[in-house]
Length: 117
Ligand code: HEM
Image (cartoon, rainbow, N blue to C red; front, side, top):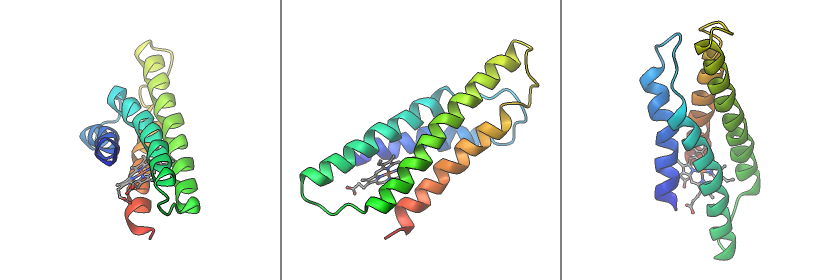
């Protein structure tokens, strides 16, 4: 489960870094899969730990959950803005802030995961 959780984070941060210098034309398909993967596997990991009577830091988990839900929202907004831009209904740069916010939130959660003891 932790392995899938790590692969999920790479699905967000990999495509983010690959496209980070772009100003337009973002492909967020893998990032959408990754954000949803983090939500599902993260909650499952909490369940596994609770079931095994292992300690769970509820404040840390709460922070990770909020950050991840925000990442899910921003990645889907980025995809919607990209669709609108592709159809000529929005500025080509419209997805950029949502794309960058998604990547930043995922990176923030890596540091919350590893530095919050
Ligand atoms: C973008 C979102 C996320 C990222 C980048 C991320 C990152 C990580 C990383 C790097 C680890 C391994 C290091 C460690 O054990 O502390 C980890 C573990 C863990 N994550 Fe996440 N996480 C995310 C979302 C979530 C969410 C939403 C939850 C729960 C609601 C969650 C719950 C957990 C738990 C319980 C572990 C510990 C697993 C164990 O050692 O038993 N994570 N996460």
